[in-house]
Amino acid sequence: MKKLLLFLVCGMLWVHSLKAQQTQYMVFEFVKVENDQLFDYIEFKDLMEKVYRQALNDKRIKGWDFWALQSGGDQAAFQYIMVTYYNDPVQMMNGLDEQSMMEYTKIAYPHLNSIQVNKLFQESLGMRDMPMRLYMKEIAETNDKFQMKPGVLASFDLMKANEGQFDVYEKAESEIFKPIHQKFVEQGLMGHWSLLRTALPLGSEAKSTHLTMNVYKDYMQFFNAQSYEDMNQTASQREAVNKGLNSRDQKWVYLATLENVVR
Image (tube, rainbow, N blue to C red; front, side, top):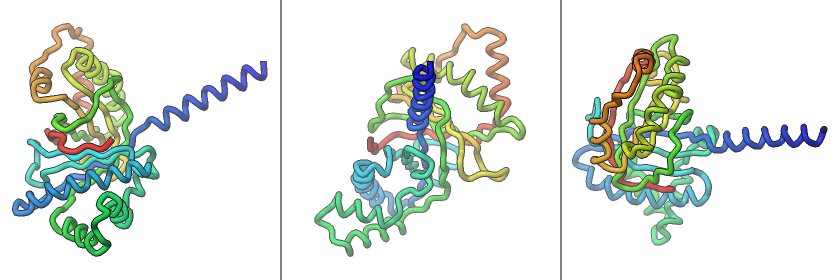
């Protein structure tokens, strides 16, 4: 009996540990580049893909995406979104310091010397600005096997839960909207959906508390999803959807195309 109890306890701890390891932590960096430097920055982000791949090989990150903004509120503030994936919150908060980035650049480009690497980074820092950075924890996602690759389309929806309705909003997303998106995935109307909670910045002055990622394989799938209307919803389901919508303020929706990806 004692052996069985010990086995059950170990099994529960293993499942809990596995679940914790699967949780994704993500940093969203919204990047602004001056118009006269866009061409130079396009070359720079291709270089960054090779650098982040070295960081992935070194297990410092779990992945990296580079998105080009197509449309969205306050679009003039930035043109790109970089997303870096981490296995745990400590890795996320530590991030990749400038020295590490330089070391990975040397590995990715062995023909560059230290002076050239330093010059490259100083030039990149001068051509870009990051007016917004969000530290996020993924708390819900659809069950799918979607593969991120260049050309994929996504909408990043920044939400702010209404005061006193934080838990109500998260419950609505997990219990009402997640099944809807799961149905979209199964019907071929969507590739992937996930809900993320903001870790930083915090406080009442934060622009958003949550973010949803709605990912589509191409524009055809995106527009098919927009035109779809579920006529089979019951009155109680529609009421639950409306209650969920009223628990948050949809601040901005950004539509973007994936240009570079590291996995």
